[in-house]
Image (cartoon, rainbow, N blue to C red; front, side):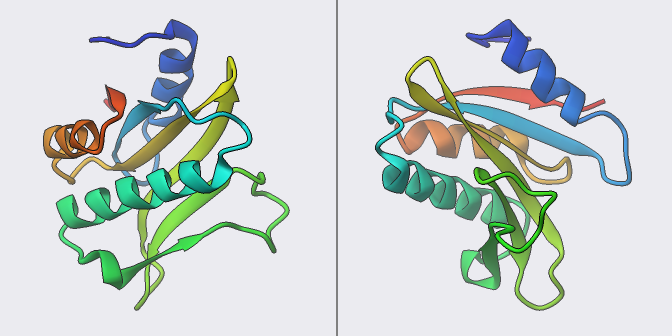
Length: 134
């Protein structure tokens, strides 16, 4: 762990990246958005997703956000970035309201440029903790 503020959240995020069908890395994005600022938090999610798409070799316009409103396995604050053409996985996130503000836990293919994504998130003005899979 490098600079995680919340050890429990870091460990839970790390567990999401455990080996599966796709090798993953992730990020914990700390925002100051209160629970009533869900529109700003969703825009932050989209902006971060666009960075991940670009750093994964896609154009942001080649992807869309699936919020799972018709899927009982999705929570209300869980979203995926998928490609338009074949609905390929680009990223997935959970928006967590913790201690009065939102944290965004987002994970993506390990083949994406992890360090560049973290830098892009910082340039968007957010504090971020990178989490690398195995």
